[in-house]
Length: 253
Image (cartoon, rainbow, N blue to C red):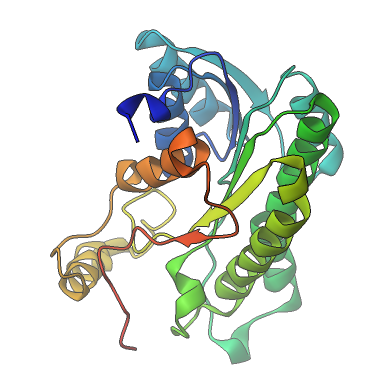
């Protein structure tokens, strides 16, 4: 497959969670590949910073300050895109608590953002692609947590497992329309979302790095390249799959 398979010139991409971390890295990479990028997030300041970064590098960015848990907001934003070729549903939040200490409101909030928010993005993108006859690509954000039973991962892991099921089911339903649906399940990645261990952050990252045969944790750009691959023509025969950029980690809890 020639390198030009990664060229997104003339295409439009929509990225949720674009204010930072993997979402920002994906939006920037899409723009560098030639796409017009619509950046969406609840964090207005971070969203502006991402758009500025894209434009300073010669790309084109549009911003949508929205809450992915609100289906109407997502739908309205997608409607402004015109033709939509790529949806990267990256927005998510982190939550950790022992099972016996998990409250209903904890589970409800994580499911609302990490699953329902992804569902809304997928539904609105798929409807638009079908309406326009676009043979597009939808990329969801799962997690290495779907492969483990790590302590404190009930809410987060359950939501990401639901994203995997959504991805596989939607792939079977969208295939006849020529729309591909895949997920990325990163290992430990250094982002603002994973930076929640306070003084123990360096110790936690060192531990996670030791689990990888590569001896390091992931960076947002590592994951963004996986997102670009699935979004591009290089993955034209790939759908319903879970790509795991995790440094070869199999967590031995």
